[in-house]
Image (cartoon, rainbow, N blue to C red):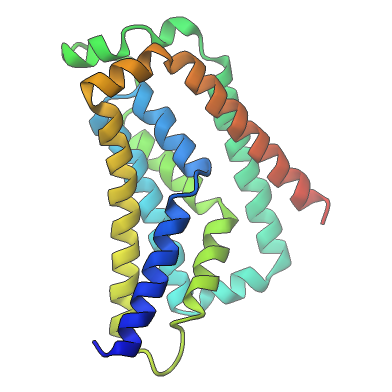
Length: 217
């Protein structure tokens, strides 16, 4: 890899990682799942979000991303559906009873049956959250304007896409694993009811804002 490609890789990788550090709907969803599910099931959310990111990365790499982003009806539809999905998640969190959050850490530690969502359900939820967030498409599209040139080989673009997808999954999975640490999980689960309500309210606010902005266009 020559210096020009190295600098492109570092620039894109750094910008991508800094974006991951900015809390958004995906981050809130991961925290919500991690404090209310078994660790192995909560990992499904991280994998689902990573797969959704991979889809947008592939679309941008093959040039379809620019077509989607330039289509006003498609972007409006994505915003409305994505906003409604966040509102749905918020409603589910806000209507849950306090008794549902009791003894989460104790139950998991004892390997007893736990009332939580399956790995497949969490994976689907993570994927829907990632794929219905138009900001993901726009972010990768703007990011790949740096590398979508004839001078950059397809192999380099693919390796960059694999790198970013892997980083998304590893970062999100690390958050889940951190919250599964007994001491940290115990502290979080004591506040799980309130954390879930707070994340639900934030997700709902974000969802309503997205829908309103899409309708007002």
